[in-house]
Structures are given as C-alpha cells and as structure tokens.
Image (cartoon, rainbow, N blue to C red):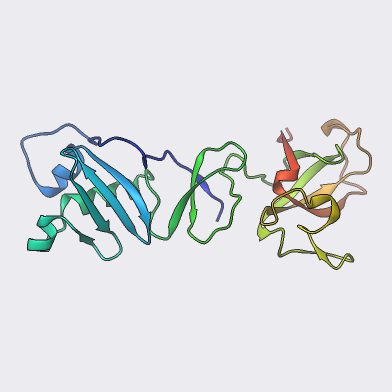
Amino acid sequence: MVPSKHTSTTTSEPTALSPGGPTRTRADRARTERMAVTPLGGGRYEVVTEYDTVYTVHLPESRCTCPDYRHRRARCKHLRRVAIDVTAGRVPAPGQREAACADCERPVYVAADEPSPVYCDSCTLDTGRFVRDRERGDLLVVARTTRDRANTVEVPGWNTTVADYPTNRGYPETDVVVDVLYPIGRDLTPDDLAPTDLKRYAFPRSRLESLGRPD
C-alpha cells in the first residue's frame, strides 16, 4: 500500500479534542480532557493525562494500566482516546509505524515491517509523471511505481539487482523500484516526447527527480 500523509501528534502536549460539558461519561472525558498519545510499538500507546499521570494502553487487547480498567475492567477514557486518535490518523494504528517521507520529510504511517525509505502520497511517482534521471539528465516517464525494493529486483541480462547495478550503488539498496519509459537523447523536453522507441527500465526512486504531470 502506498503510504499516506498524516499529521503526527506523537510529541505534542496533552490536548482536548472538544470543549467540556455537563455530561461526564467515559466517551465524553476521552474527548474533553487533555491527553497526549504516543505510540510505543506492538499495539501499545503511552497516554499522558492533564495531571501528568502516565498510563499504557494495549489497544489490540483493549487493556489499560489505569485504575478504572484494572478495578472495573471498563473501557476507560484512555482506551477510547487512543482509539479516537488512531481513527483520526493522529497516531499510527497497531501494526504500523511512523516514518518520514524520504522526499519531503512529512510524517507517514506504514506497516511496521516496511523497509525504509518510504514516500508519502504526494511524493509517490504515479503513472504518466515526468521525471529526470539524476545521473544522466535524461527525461523519463513513469510507467508505474512498484512495491518492490531495489535489492530484490533482478536486472535482465546483468545477473545483478537494481540496487547493485553500477550506477545505482549510491542510492539506498532498499529503495522503492520505479519502472520508467526511457527516451533516446538527453535534451528532450515533455513537448518533444513521443510514445515510439521508448525502452522500459527499473530505477531506484531516489534517483528520479519529479518534473510534474503531463497536461
């Protein structure tokens, strides 16, 4: 899955999601009391309350270290707040981790075992986008962005991977592989590009400079 863009609150101070009111249910408190939620990994989250009390929520097992849960086995306000923040995309869900987009450095949430580098939706090169090869300066057109990594994709006829191809060794070996259409000549502009005589090659994503989309 292509990573999506999020606004992280991992390092924020305790905040309320909505103004307080006369009702005091656990669901109300989850929204009106100031809390800060920080992912710890493995489906666990640290919740800091407005009183600087710290609890640990295990979301997949619906457990919390607070007295309300320990004594009453209630779905406490801390569990509810973590669930709210996960649903709203403010913290990664269980099984995800937060990373910085390798291009724009915005936070993205990806699978916990997804290797780096990763890219947000805006920096993922979609089909038809013009790019420039940073090594040769050639104009290319993206055929597709794959989910494969450069150290796992073989280069036909070379008995090597995309990562180990001589001109790619300066780029991350686990970079995302992008299939491109390779035109002849390095002085082409997008207006000069024709669909004939184009060859298809695999490149590490960070070797490609985005030039925008065709009209």
